[in-house]
Amino acid sequence: MAKLSGTTVMLTGAGGALATAVAQELIDAGAELLLVGRGEALARAEDRFPAKKVLDLDLTDPDCVDVLKKQRADVLVHTAGNFSMQEAHKASDKDYRSLFGANMQTLFHAVQGVLPHMLKQKEGMIIGVSAGQAARMSGPRAALYTASKAAVAAYLLSLHDELRTKGVTTLTLYPMGAIDTPANREAGLTWEDTIDSRALAQTLAHAITRPARAHMTELKVYPEHH
Picture 1: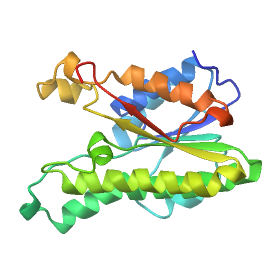
Picture 2 (picture 1 turned 30 degrees about the horizontal axis):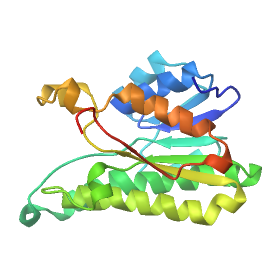
Picture 3 (picture 1 turned 90 degrees about the vertical axis):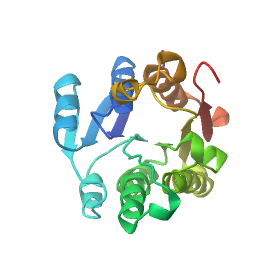
Picture 4 (picture 1 turned 90 degrees about the horizontal axis):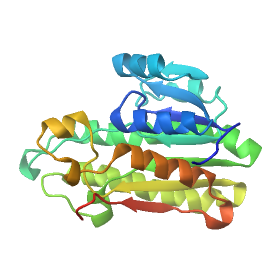
């Protein structure tokens, strides 16, 4: 197991299925958590995990950046996001704003919040979650979702190119399939069809502890029957 004692990790999307698995793995590895989320999901995470701080924030609101800048995070793990599908001719401006807001704007604000401290200490890591559709650059009935997740990947890769000489690196995680969550099980997906959320969490914890000389900028994780 990766050892993260003394490392403070800001985890967004707290209370979500992936974030819950990540939180448990990070706690087991000795990390201190800054939990960022909303409402009932955040309350569940707060009850379950010991946290250095718990922040109920709307990451689509630019005002959240000032709150985040007051925190000191060594690592940002951004799992906040949203998914929806629509036929191309039925997609609306509301769909566009919803998906780019949840997937890209939240990441942008989270990064703007954590970067000042990371740059000051000349060390930090930013992890974001893209999607298999974005890695393939296509997604039937998911053009807006795919585009928003592709934007996440392009943004993180560009950040890495700009900031790596200043000690800040990025990692884009591509789940190349659905993650094993209660919602996906209810939708009829089986254990074999999905990616184990705990395995994803373990992968992220391992990536955080890799030395700079062996850093990964992109990581694709597949379901068992790929």
